[in-house]
Image (cartoon, rainbow, N blue to C red; front, side):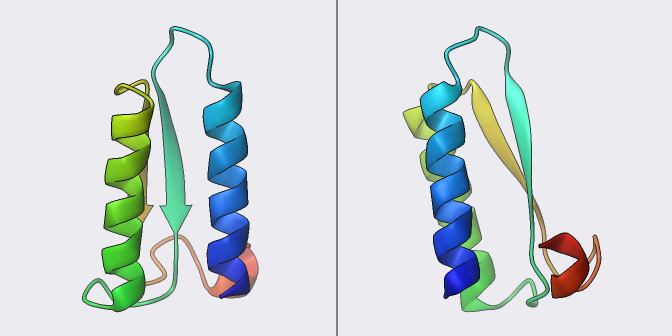
Length: 74
């Protein structure tokens, strides 16, 4: 749960600083499977970020350790 809390804090800070007109894509990686609850939460998070930012921010999700294990993506 510490990782989820950290991701939320980072995303909230990013949304707060996103006053530019340029669209940005955030990358969210996790080591859980693409059918896990963590993935489902990540998808909901990505949708919320897109909605709250008016489409200025999008979140690209990388499940299944695609970008590395938890130690290397933290």
